[in-house]
Length: 312
Ligand code: PMP
Image 1 (cartoon, rainbow, N blue to C red):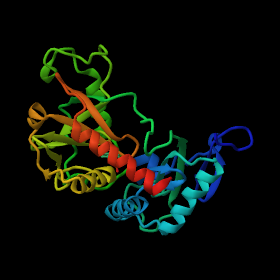
Image 2: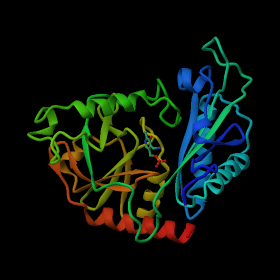
Image 3: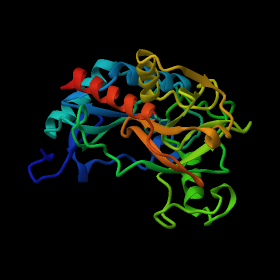
Image 4: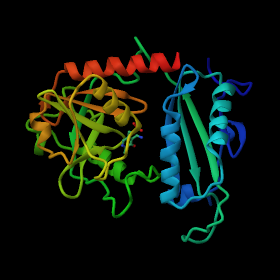
């Protein structure tokens, strides 16, 4: 099922054409490269269909609106380019990254309203999802809370999913360098020694829990499922929304709120969500260990059933 261009290479979609990975390039003058002036979506294909396509297309539209990036491509065109890329690579279960940059506008920071976007679709194979699927992760996540704060909405709105992930990168770098036993790790690095955590959690500038570098966070306490509200600087994750809806179906009480960081000290269960991981249980936050609990398990099971029903 591996991709081919005739010599075994994957094919990517660049500005309307399928090209072998080694020839897939963008200009050094591209604003996506120069400034991170671009919007993107990470999507997942299960059994050949894109899970939650409309929600991803809506979020991409919202990101482009915030950036005033008028790329002029319909969602049907974008979707057919994704489908073409999957078909050309003979992929049914895949990670898909769709990027739209403001293109080449050399010489000035102020964006030109006339845009010739650069549109790239990048894919890689993933295992099958749905019932009895193998998760893409190795096991429940180790997590550290970091001092690096989530960029506030008044600076860069979190609901714009842009190429600029510097805040998240700095948070991951900080997570990697937390000393054994220092600060909130309360006597411990992870059981795997000094291995970097699988994810870091950032607070907002008011000290409330925000999100992971590339994931949303959920905590369960006394049977109530709580996640930070998107009124704070939190990306409106597509998986986050699906999980909240599944919880409603299961009559699990949910709360979207400005969560205190101390919530993590009293929680019974913690898990993370994103498109690639789906729901990933957390086994450790700083010095505190967690078992994968019943609410996480029920939601994971429901999520897998939903994927199975919709996509296979
Ligand atoms: N927050 C951030 C900062 C992210 O990068 C991601 C991954 N896109 C998420 C949350 C999870 O969003 P989704 O469920 O749509 O993948």
